[in-house]
Length: 288
Image 1 (cartoon, rainbow, N blue to C red):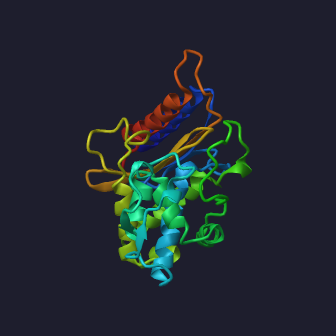
Image 2 (tube, helix red, strand yellow; image 1 turned 60 degrees about the horizontal axis):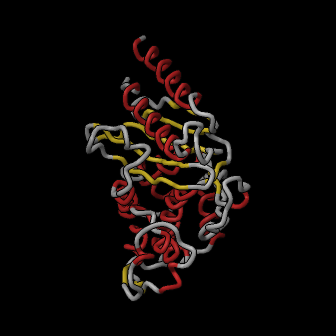
Image 3 (tube, one colour; image 1 turned 30 degrees about the vertical axis):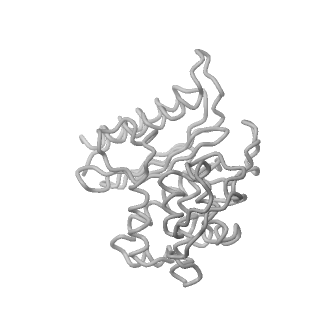
């Protein structure tokens, strides 16, 4: 009875957090201890922003598993990589630096560096990454661009960017998690368990600590990837508690105003909403 009562309270609290804001919030939250899942618009297409990079990473790792890419390949940072790039630190560095493809994947994930994203994506194709997503079951994810145009307006259409769903991103994260102990899940992803372990650790190495981790206890381990879009903010991650996977949360805000009525930037409330959803999961989810 206590578990059922807590389940109802969790659903009410998650709904209230979303209802408190004028913008759209889509999410899927799954208690990994019980399997209970809470969702809102989880199958609705939504801008992915940089949450797409988790699937780019996995497509690159599959290509490495297949022998088509070499993670030790040396890549020279050229000035052209910094053109039309608005995230990460490489764009401020002096061309000529040499890093490995493995390190480019790391930079793409832990700092969302789009110079590194270009380095990785140049060794793949849009069709390859999009096809990878469809092949493993992410039917609601559509990769459309290498790097989205900087001049996108806040009311851009969905077809102007890569889109995904909260359910697809939760599926991918759970597959990566399961692949740590399941050869079947690793085969689904097309990667060895060693490469899947690299992927999970790279997600854990995330430097940016807004949204999902923002209201959690200091030091809480979160394997996650966030995104900054013109229409909203998003974050997808696996939260650990006492050393064990606790819950998955994939949250996407959309139609976020540039400023709230009191002048607060819309993105501030967008990130805060995701942080509150995460805290609600932390407080309300209970083991069986």
